[in-house]
Image (cartoon, rainbow over all chains, first blue to last red; front, side):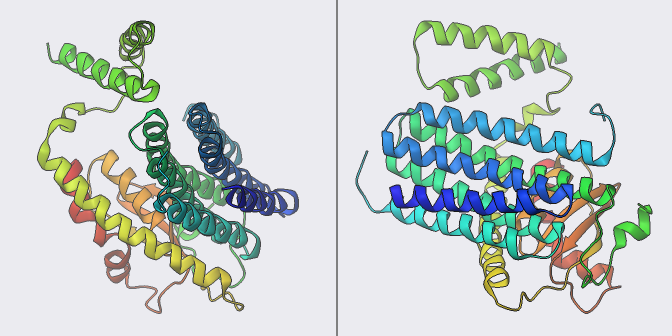
Length: 84
Length: 110
Length: 167
């Protein structure tokens, strides 16, 4: 299990490279969105390693908040208000 | 916890897809192609990892929560990605120079 | 009467979701869940999806199951497709944005069609304007102007099941 965790963290750092180097703002937004989904998987593996189920609560809340953050970023890129 | 081999298979496939998505995010040339790789691979990869958690913990609090998280990821991730794609197009990010057609620009003019 | 029925149904669904998320039956949690369900159903009724009663139709559930099975097949195929394109040293891509006409009517069906298209090989929905879906395709065919063939390739495989689930 710890190997999987290590591999996922490497994947997260690959996304972080795109966030740091992305030539345009949407590239960075895509990187952030991808990291958000990957962290949900990391929380799941943490849950297996420790055997405690509150990591899955963290996963659900993280998925929700990262989705909202992605929508807010997308609306910001469109240059419109949040009501539409 | 049961100690079968199914969770390991599911989680290793999921982690492999996650890594392919991350590599695609780095290698592909423009934001739309990156979004394709990132969305497809990372969504299915994470869903498979969560299904592995379900297989490992079975009919318990952890299993049910992991199942709900998997459904939620499968539902929201494509939605978020096409919001981002539309935002990028409206913000004026050009397609990669090797692209062959852009009907959206022809029809909406933005 | 009709609206009262709908509110009660909303409350029931939110309450069941709460029970699944907490997965315990101690008194405090259940009472808090019931109170929150009532509050949410009353305050957020405008935001909840219409036609909740369709959740109790077995025929729709059957077609939803069919849709999920075909979607699962295409999603796995899509992942191997991306794997091939990403790991190939020459990056064999030929991207472009094409448009696709859908025959689905309701908004929920269109939203699910857009999500399904995003998860299938090489395609990513960008926007929906009326009946037209704009789709970013990673490997556009030779026949650029043949909208019908493109529609059949991208959207046709899901419309049959989705129409029976939502319309």
